[in-house]
Image (tube, rainbow, N blue to C red; front, side, top):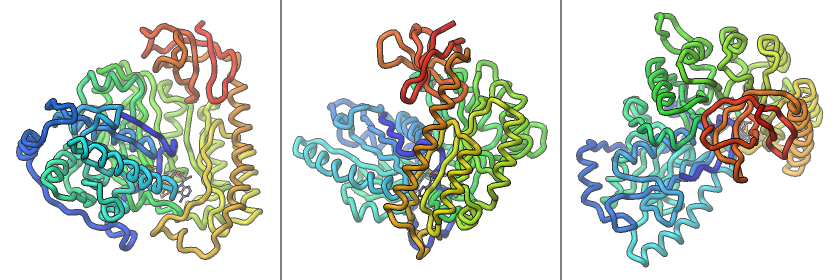
Length: 498
Ligand code: SAH
Ligand code: SF4
Ligand code: F3S
């Protein structure tokens, strides 16, 4: 399965407020078949690309970590229906693009990819082979039917809330229907998505994602997420606990809890009281064999004392926090509807650093939001100087259809955005390098995850999420070993086992 991370912070997820966003979210067609019916359809369909009965699916993933998780869950659903995943699109009977709508470039990538697929589909058709094409993810949710209008080779458009209906959608498409599934499903998709078997989990590695919360009610004025992922929904403690234990039983050592607004997660705890993310992390940290916990992405407004306390108390909770602020100017924050000030954010960071002094902070920034003045931008530079992020992502503002920001008439010129981005990225990079340099000479715990580029090398992650390269034996994958950092590379660290 191919995973291309276009935006590596967890976010960009869209929670669809039913009816929000005017006409940009067309309704889906809502025909449900039973699983038995669908299996018959698949069994009766033409043989697979290689003439066997096993069909192959190639999944290409854009966007955030939640899309990575979703792609795995879609692959799991398809595997129960006889599909094997392949890394080679030429072998596939089904091509599935799991898309991202967060910035214009991300969405346009999908259409250029569909252009290439059109040619491929034609070539295959000349060889007598059929290729089905599906578009999932946030572009699917935002554009629905429009995708099929612009790219008629697409057979299925399926939004994130209806992935459990994917096998039925395929069965319908096999009968010649163009399927658009973007309605919010009433049934809980997580109850209906099958879990992978142990071998599949083990193949995916020792570090796994687990979605605990989906959607967003914050409505930042630049962001499409509240329109593509629905309103905030938290999964239950029981569902999360069961999934975490299943991952650990199959060899997973590190779990990253995912949510568009992960720290808004809440649910009824085992003791009958209402829990927040801090309590959930406490519960999960008791699972034997689970060595590391992380979570992303957090909103500053939802960072409560219990969660900060978890960073102090839980050894398994890694000292890394992605806490986007977007801008260092109060007037821009207000225009973005972030509903906190720079002071609120800095006070919060002070409390977090007090609880966990070695915490590495990460953030997201947008430059050139409509109305952003030179002075506003300098405020962002000052904030970055104050916080000194260990890592950060920064973007030029991209107007997204249907969001309030896009409607404004004081957009910033492209060259101004570019200059600001360049300056900001240079400063962020300087701090990232300084943070990495500060690691040299330290002895740290390293979770060994996978083979490195050169023979004899393994790659792991430091507690602060940096990739670390070390000479070690492949049989050690999954172990947490003590290593001493010897030097820095471009985006990684080098270490020796101690
Ligand atoms: N839920 C997270 C982030 C969601 S989107 C949060 O609350 O911060 C991931 C990142 O993409 C955002 O943090 C933001 O920096 C960036 N982003 C979102 N919309 C954007 C837009 N219209 N233009 C440029 N960057 C954007
Ligand atoms: Fe988007 Fe804001 Fe929600 Fe984050 S909090 S997903 S930036 S609307
Ligand atoms: Fe993620 Fe992009 Fe959607 S960042 S939530 S896939 S818009």
